[in-house]
Image 1 (cartoon, rainbow, N blue to C red):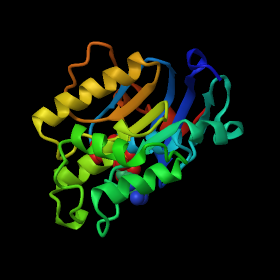
Image 2 (cartoon, rainbow, N blue to C red):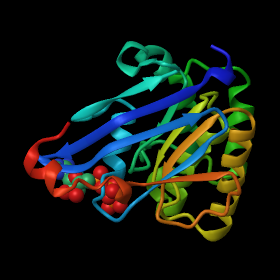
Image 3 (cartoon, protein in one colour):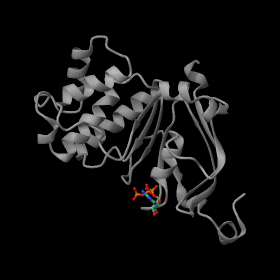
Image 4 (spheres, rainbow, N blue to C red):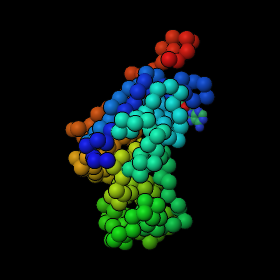
Amino acid sequence: MDKQSLSISLEKLACQRDERLLFTGLSAEIQAGDVLQIIGPNGAGKTTLLRCLVSLAEPSAGHIRFCGQRLSKQLFEFRRQLLYLGHLPGIKSALTPAENLRWYAGLEGDGDNLDQRVELALKEVGLYGYEDQSCFNLSAGQQRRVALARLYLSQAKIWILDEPLTAIDKAGVAKLEQRFAEHSEAGGIVILTTHQDLKLESLKRLDLQDYLPTAEHMFGGVE
Ligand SMILES: Nc1ncnc2c1ncn2[C@@H]1O[C@H](COP(=O)(O)OP(=O)(O)OP(=O)(O)O)[C@@H](O)[C@H]1O
């Protein structure tokens, strides 16, 4: 699959949690080179949408397509190209930053020049010097940086990132924006949630408030 053909289509998606409809009729096209920020107030369903995108949850209506095919039929290929960072840093606190990154790279089956690449990734996120400390001893922002170091290590083309900037300082946010730009310029896709105002020129925004259910949806059933 060449990188030009990379695309994710959302077709009339609706999502609910515990019988409550969060959004409905959401359609969007995401293509190679896009950086898409999902916005909306607390509880609007941003995390729920990302969980649907990575197949950890099911939409209650509509479809997701990956490169033109139903996502459910392309899961293996999609996951091969996916880097998903959830709400929590998702690191093992008993391990060091370097050990965590080596473990993740092992999951991707990507062991070439690993020690050198891990060292570089840790430098990029400002954790060089902490690489042999247990993550348990790191601050919240430093633990998040361990997870974010994967953005400098992974070969995945599709990045789906839930609140990646939480606990990250101003300089760190600027550096990550630069990383998102590099990834999109290289033909990747970045889909993220954050309450921060990003300054990326190429940024697209998808506001879940534009897809709030109407009274008809709530009481007349969802199409
Ligand atoms: N574990 C859960 N069990 C049941 N309902 C949940 C759960 N987590 C969230 N919800 C409900 O789903 C709705 C959407 O939550 P979600 O986490 O997707 O929102 P969000 O837009 O990501 O919010 P935030 O900006 O606060 O992170 C919330 O209004 C909440 O009521």
